[in-house]
Image (tube, rainbow, N blue to C red; front, side):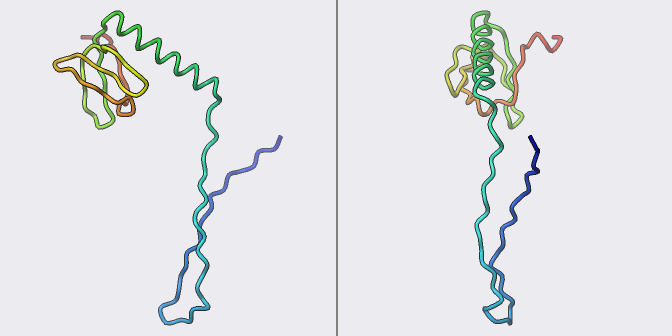
Amino acid sequence: MSIQPVLPVIPSRKVRAPNGPRSRALKFTPPVTFRFPAHSVEDGAAHHQAELFYLQKQIQTQTQMVIILEDGEQIEGCIEWYDRSSLKVRGRTKTLIYKSAVKYMYKLTETGQ
Protein backbone atom coordinates (compact mmCIF):
# COMPACT_ATOMS: atom_id res chain seq x y z
CA MET A 1 0.00 0.00 0.00
CA SER A 2 1.62 3.24 -1.09
CA ILE A 3 0.70 6.61 0.32
CA GLN A 4 0.12 9.32 -2.23
CA PRO A 5 0.20 12.98 -1.23
CA VAL A 6 -2.91 15.11 -1.67
CA LEU A 7 -2.05 18.17 -3.71
CA PRO A 8 -4.31 21.21 -3.85
CA VAL A 9 -5.89 22.11 -7.15
CA ILE A 10 -5.25 25.71 -8.11
CA PRO A 11 -7.86 26.97 -10.54
CA SER A 12 -6.78 29.03 -13.48
CA ARG A 13 -8.55 32.34 -14.03
CA LYS A 14 -9.52 34.13 -17.15
CA VAL A 15 -6.93 36.87 -17.36
CA ARG A 16 -6.58 39.40 -20.12
CA ALA A 17 -3.85 41.90 -20.54
CA PRO A 18 -5.22 45.48 -20.39
CA ASN A 19 -3.99 46.43 -23.85
CA GLY A 20 -3.34 42.98 -25.23
CA PRO A 21 -5.35 40.92 -27.71
CA ARG A 22 -8.04 38.48 -26.61
CA SER A 23 -5.88 35.54 -27.68
CA ARG A 24 -3.93 35.87 -24.42
CA ALA A 25 -7.04 35.04 -22.34
CA LEU A 26 -6.86 31.89 -20.22
CA LYS A 27 -9.69 29.46 -19.76
CA PHE A 28 -11.40 29.50 -16.33
CA THR A 29 -11.93 26.17 -14.64
CA PRO A 30 -13.95 26.01 -11.40
CA PRO A 31 -12.13 24.71 -8.33
CA VAL A 32 -12.50 21.06 -7.50
CA THR A 33 -14.03 20.42 -4.08
CA PHE A 34 -12.13 18.15 -1.75
CA ARG A 35 -13.53 16.33 1.24
CA PHE A 36 -11.53 14.51 3.84
CA PRO A 37 -12.60 10.93 4.29
CA ALA A 38 -15.24 10.64 7.02
CA HIS A 39 -14.64 8.65 10.15
CA SER A 40 -15.97 5.16 10.08
CA VAL A 41 -19.64 4.67 10.82
CA GLU A 42 -18.77 2.68 13.95
CA ASP A 43 -16.79 5.61 15.42
CA GLY A 44 -19.69 8.01 14.80
CA ALA A 45 -22.22 5.63 16.35
CA ALA A 46 -20.05 5.05 19.42
CA HIS A 47 -19.56 8.80 19.88
CA HIS A 48 -23.30 9.41 19.51
CA GLN A 49 -24.15 6.70 22.07
CA ALA A 50 -21.60 8.12 24.55
CA GLU A 51 -23.11 11.60 24.15
CA LEU A 52 -26.64 10.30 24.78
CA PHE A 53 -25.52 8.32 27.83
CA TYR A 54 -23.71 11.36 29.29
CA LEU A 55 -26.67 13.71 28.76
CA GLN A 56 -29.16 11.21 30.18
CA LYS A 57 -27.03 10.74 33.31
CA GLN A 58 -26.78 14.51 33.88
CA ILE A 59 -30.56 14.87 33.49
CA GLN A 60 -31.29 12.06 35.98
CA THR A 61 -28.92 13.42 38.64
CA GLN A 62 -29.89 17.07 37.95
CA THR A 63 -26.23 18.04 37.81
CA GLN A 64 -25.44 21.77 37.63
CA MET A 65 -23.63 22.24 34.31
CA VAL A 66 -21.67 25.09 32.74
CA ILE A 67 -22.13 25.29 28.96
CA ILE A 68 -19.69 27.40 26.97
CA LEU A 69 -20.99 28.52 23.59
CA GLU A 70 -18.93 29.13 20.44
CA ASP A 71 -19.21 32.91 20.93
CA GLY A 72 -17.84 32.65 24.50
CA GLU A 73 -21.15 33.05 26.34
CA GLN A 74 -21.47 30.97 29.50
CA ILE A 75 -24.75 29.35 30.55
CA GLU A 76 -25.20 27.65 33.94
CA GLY A 77 -28.03 25.32 34.88
CA CYS A 78 -29.44 21.80 34.77
CA ILE A 79 -30.19 20.07 31.50
CA GLU A 80 -33.94 19.34 31.42
CA TRP A 81 -34.09 17.49 28.10
CA TYR A 82 -32.34 17.11 24.76
CA ASP A 83 -33.10 16.01 21.25
CA ARG A 84 -31.06 15.52 18.10
CA SER A 85 -30.14 19.18 17.68
CA SER A 86 -30.80 21.03 20.94
CA LEU A 87 -30.62 21.13 24.74
CA LYS A 88 -33.05 22.73 27.18
CA VAL A 89 -31.27 24.19 30.20
CA ARG A 90 -32.98 25.36 33.38
CA GLY A 91 -30.92 28.00 35.17
CA ARG A 92 -31.79 31.60 35.93
CA THR A 93 -34.03 31.31 32.90
CA LYS A 94 -35.05 28.39 30.73
CA THR A 95 -32.87 28.37 27.63
CA LEU A 96 -33.00 26.34 24.44
CA ILE A 97 -29.50 25.85 23.00
CA TYR A 98 -28.58 24.40 19.62
CA LYS A 99 -25.95 21.68 20.02
CA SER A 100 -24.05 23.18 17.09
CA ALA A 101 -23.55 26.36 19.18
CA VAL A 102 -21.96 24.47 22.10
CA LYS A 103 -18.18 24.64 22.29
CA TYR A 104 -17.91 22.47 25.41
CA MET A 105 -19.59 21.80 28.75
CA TYR A 106 -18.56 20.65 32.18
CA LYS A 107 -20.02 20.03 35.65
CA LEU A 108 -20.10 23.12 37.86
CA THR A 109 -18.52 21.12 40.71
CA GLU A 110 -15.44 20.38 38.54
CA THR A 111 -14.30 24.02 38.80
CA GLY A 112 -13.35 23.61 42.45
CA GLN A 113 -16.20 25.81 43.72
